[in-house]
Image (cartoon, rainbow, N blue to C red; front, side):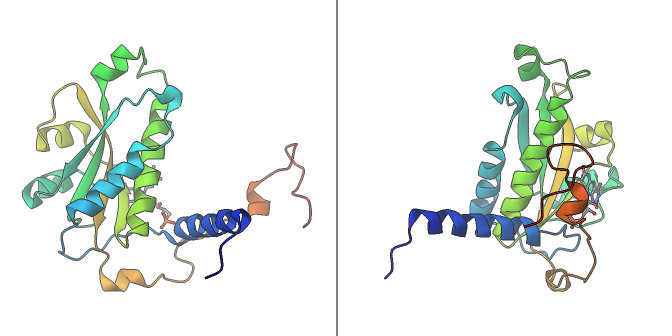
Length: 197
Ligand SMILES: Cc1cc2nc3c(=O)[nH]c(=O)nc-3n(C[C@H](O)[C@H](O)[C@H](O)COP(=O)(O)O)c2cc1C
């Protein structure tokens, strides 16, 4: 067997990561098959290793698989179009935030931390062959009541998870468009295009 050079290993790894990033699409149709504990733990591990401003880590993750509680959450979440078999709710731990001297009403980094964890987890779900979809349109007080959250834990983001229904495995052409890199990026100065390759 040929031994990969360090360069090959790096570029192969980059290809794998880019492929996972590029092929992930939100999934809003799931089968009833539950997600294994091992897969949930791998997704949580991806969330655990997300970027975090100042490494303060003021978020907690709440896994919900009880169908009744998922139904209760759906009832107060207009953004939940799917019928997921599991949720990971990203919470802000306000006690931890206070210990870290984070001013929740002023510090925009707290939202970025939620996004980095959510992105890592949705990419890992996809890498495992699972589907995910965010929900940010929900009643905070309704979700807090549905999940019996203590008042110190604020629900920020819901990641809906499940096994994609078969029709979801086929990507609709043009279903989710992306601007080309040239249209997104300036080089050194605003207005200056990327150099030609
Ligand atoms: C911050 C944020 C909030 C979102 N909220 C919802 C939501 O409430 N419900 C939903 O179905 N999708 C939601 N989405 C998913 C987007 O609609 C989806 O990522 C976008 O249409 C691009 O599709 P793609 O991720 O498949 O490329 C949200 C995405 C982000 C980043």
